[in-house]
Length: 607
Image (tube, rainbow, N blue to C red; front, side, top):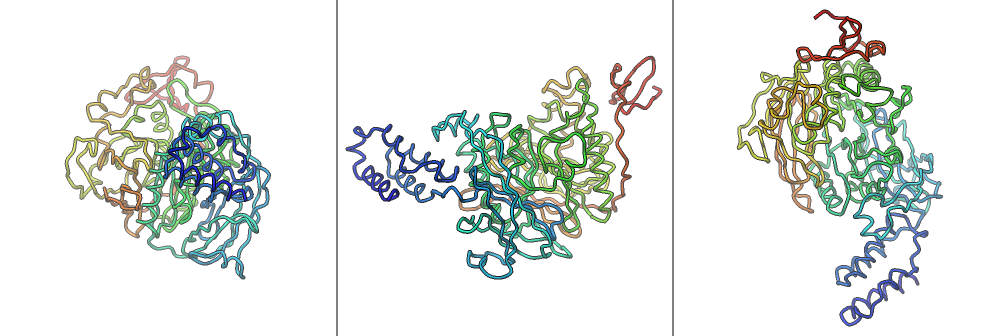
């Protein structure tokens, strides 16, 4: 009866909108309570409210039809939403799951069936794996928060807060090389059906996706990220998983917007989520003591449990082996925890102690993988606006020795929103290893599309790491800095280095050895793991139909076997030395105290 009455109202508005427009009192329509918020899921009711406000503001046929559609799309409060599968441990046998329900709806489980493209009836027979979820009531989360678009579109005040139930479940003892369909919820209230494939027992060639920095903040950002997700799934339907190194949303801090997170799951990335697991880590814009990230993902959390100073979020640093690749997913977001060199940024206990030790531990435990690939949001090297941030000198100081010792082949980065091919980089002196590069194509250079004039290429990582930033899957874009600008931004003066205007990498532009520019469209990269090389194919998403343009193809090769690093505890600068007078000599920072000179690790040296 409610739906009939409301549709009659819509029809009346539609038939007589020109005559009745002046007589219509928006306050009366907006105050209508035939559809109570408490009866429906938060996402579906919000979409209904947005459509209703638009129809009242302008009773066009399109707006009225959209309102009818959103009424039909209302989901009862027991329905699950924001569902996602995440790699959690051995991808041959395990998979993590997470989803939300409204506050108070604590019942929930995941059902898994060994069948591709399953239908609801396939979950009624034998062979269904059922795993109860662990429910957690979230903190009270601001819904629209700082997101002015959400405030304006919904009419929901920035101060409005909701609690949710975060459900997490872990599937174990799955069968390798099997395509599974899955759904979440409980009897009478099941989600849509998604799928994933476990790693093969003897995994050969496979592909995965890299997308980053959606920065969900308004409809444009939602739509462009969804365009990219649709194109990625259509172009690479065989992809096993999607790496996403952070900045899911725009608004961090305590006033962040859960609406932004909701749209990432429910709309922007839904095509990818239904087709494969996600491999996430956090970005600086995801930072919030509301821990939205922790509530939304279910990845391996053993790193957090093994260290004394816990990072803000769970499951942001973890590893797994897939085929002949060791993936090291990590976060530098918590570099300040315990203590760090706030003046000259030459050490961080969190990075030089905990993260570096974890890198050595994981590479030592997996000596036979052919490639070692890291995934992080922050950049060690980048060529746009973030290249002069105050953090990269610290990250380079802390992590380059680790990348060298652990022989990281590829560093997948986010944060800079530009398409950047960097290196391979010699970790000792931050110079490009030019004799490790071949087969580059010469094209027009000196433009925002491609500043270097290089495309393609084969990059050998025997003696250095190849760094890659795949632009953005969304709408927020930065542009490449020129050689002249990079040279002007260079400084050896430590008093200027951390002013967000300078960097300390000499001849920085030379590190950009391949395509370097702004694609001006949502961008994703397909990486195919082969026996002899990794192949990168990057695409722009050109429309809402899934059409794409291939913008670059590269190969990463390794000819030397990896060495096995020693798993030793890290050493930090002793406190008694740390507070001495610091000075720069031949590009290195030294500490002078009581007439003696020390390096940053506290070892006495003679200069």
